[in-house]
Length: 296
Image 1 (cartoon, rainbow, N blue to C red):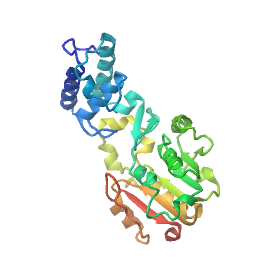
Image 2 (cartoon, rainbow, N blue to C red; image 1 turned 90 degrees about the vertical axis):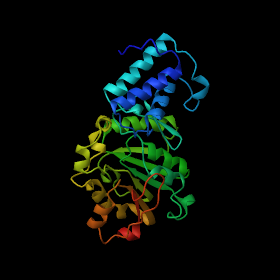
Image 3 (tube, one colour; image 1 turned 90 degrees about the horizontal axis):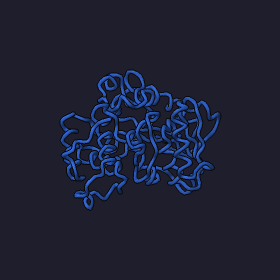
Image 4 (cartoon, rainbow, N blue to C red; image 1 turned 30 degrees about the vertical axis):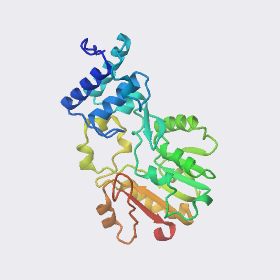
C-alpha cells in the first residue's frame, strides 16, 4: 500500500500533487477524461465519496488519515500500474449514464452514443415505430441500454462473444431495470440470433489494426484484447457484419457501425457500397450508415 505524503493536508494539496505526478509519469488519458487535471479531480472526488461535479467547495477541506491512505493507494495504482481510472473506480460515464465496469470489458466510449439518443435523425425513418433493435459487440451493455432508453417501445437484443463481458452487461441491465426489454446473447455476431430481423442494428466492433494494437499505450493493455484488435487492417469484424446484416434488417432498416479511423481502408475494400458518413460528436469519418436496400 502506498503511503500518503504527510505534507499533503487539503484536497487542494492532493489535487496539485496528483496533477504533477500524472504529468511526471507520462500517463495517457482517454478513458473518460482527456487531461491530468480532470483525471486527478475525478479520482480524488470519487475516492472521498464526494459529488463528481462539486470540486470547488471542498478544495480547502483536510483529509482524514484513512481518506489520505485510500487516495494514495488509488493514485499509486493509476501511476505505477497505468490502470485506467474507470477500472479503479468501478464505473464509467457515457452521455450522462453511469455504467459499472471492470477489466472484463472495455471502458464505455462510442461515437454512436449521441446518435442513439438523437434517434439517428435524420437517417432513421419513423423512430417512434422502431420495435426491434440489435446491438452487436455489446461489451458492458452500455449501447444496448441507451438504445432501450432512446426507443422505449423496442425490444433490444445484445450480443457478445465474451461470457465475462456479458456478466458485466447483465449487472448494468439490471441497474436500469431493463431485464424485460434487453436480452443478452453469447456468440459470434449474428450466429446466436437465428433468423431474427430488426429495424435498427448498431455495432461498435473491434476495429484497431494490428500496427496500432502493437503501439497502444499501456492503459489500453488492461482492456480485453478481444474487444480491440480485428485483423491486420482492423476490419475483420466489420466485414463479417456487412456480409450478414441485410438478412437481419427489415425493409428500410438501418445499420450503424463505428470503425474508428478506418474509412479509407473500408471504402477501398467495399467500393460498391454507398456509405453515409455522418458528422458525429467528437469525431469525423468514424461511423458509417447503410440501409438494408444499400446492403443488398
